[in-house]
Length: 377
Image (cartoon, rainbow, N blue to C red; front, side, top):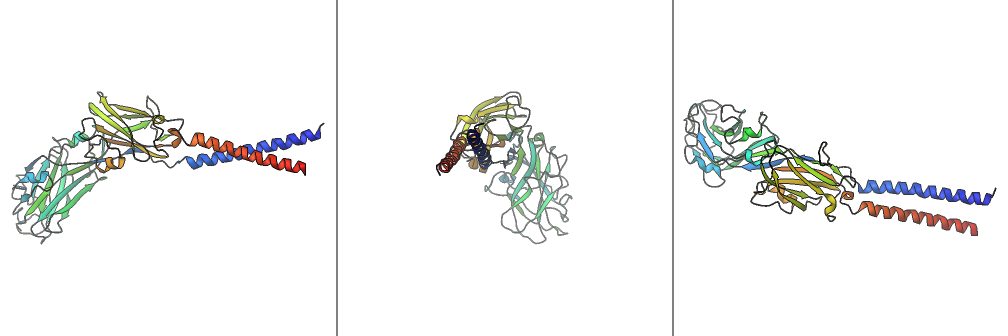
């Protein structure tokens, strides 16, 4: 047997195995370095604010039965004057729901038209900009909501008024459903009511004067709008990489009409707008091949927004601008999903391969020089 040949072959084999092990470790390191697994994709909430366009005083069992008797329509808008409830209530008006408190209903907010009929309502916020002539005897303004035209009401949410000057009081919140499971039909103009109730803790009539500047309502909702990796969506996909770089968006429960869909990359820049998508049977579909724009940013969440095609302002170039001003762009849905840079693609697949190949060649060349130096010695 040629022992010299056998020894050389063994050394060469060990060298190759060493290089392969180093390459595997390097490739694993690069994969971990460039692939961020901490994605946070999923359906996101949208909050929209609206003002009323109709009102009516409660005229039975409601204090002096005239509510905001002076210019009640002034509360439709911010800063246009006051709706005034003068000499409010009966002598005993310390309990909001009792007959001694003045009550006034505001409605026709147009809430249900601002979201897909299949949306999930997660919270309702009522803002009351209100002033009072005096804070003695703890005057309060309470709010309650109706989902059936005033036949039924939520529990009241009261606030003791802390100053005579106009002050903004906030009732409810983005995660407060007021003890009721809301549907979009509950928010229709025919069903939704905001009742403003004024009172104080004095046992005799106090002749308090309440002035209401504005009574808007904000609704926080989640639209049925998700990302998938296939054309016939079965399972939601919130993580797109080189092997899944075609995004299929689908929403259900959308009203008949036309919609625009905007895709925003990891930097929050508008990549593309899929315009004027027609919905005739409640399903909104859109898709985007991530390889179509190789300058887009990855390795973080993308967002996909929906607005009606009839919106007065098109989707902006900045995602931050869109979510900061949802009413300006009439946003109806928001979904996010993680996009690895390899899905776009440009960097890590090609570059990582070059780096690993260069590392392997460098190690092999170094080991070969050491071997030649050893033989010469």
